[in-house]
Length: 77
Image (cartoon, rainbow, N blue to C red; front, top):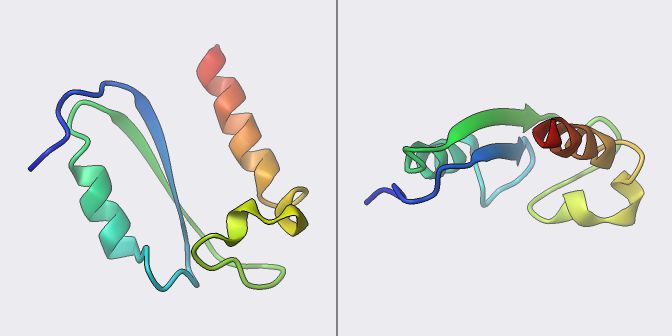
C-alpha cells in the first residue's frame, strides 16, 4: 500500500532513543509517500532523552524546535 495522493514536501524526523518509531519504521512509512519530496533526519539526543513524544516538551523549545521552525520557514519561500 502506498500513499500516492499527497504531493507535498515532508520532513521526517526520528530520534535515536525512540523505541516505537525506529529508523526502519520511519523509512518504511516515508517510502510509502511516493509523490512527496521527503527529507529524512535522524536526531541523536544531546541534552537528555527525547523518546517518542519528547520533541513536543517545552524543554526542547531552544534545542530542537528551531530546526523545525527553520525548515517550515524554508518551505514558504
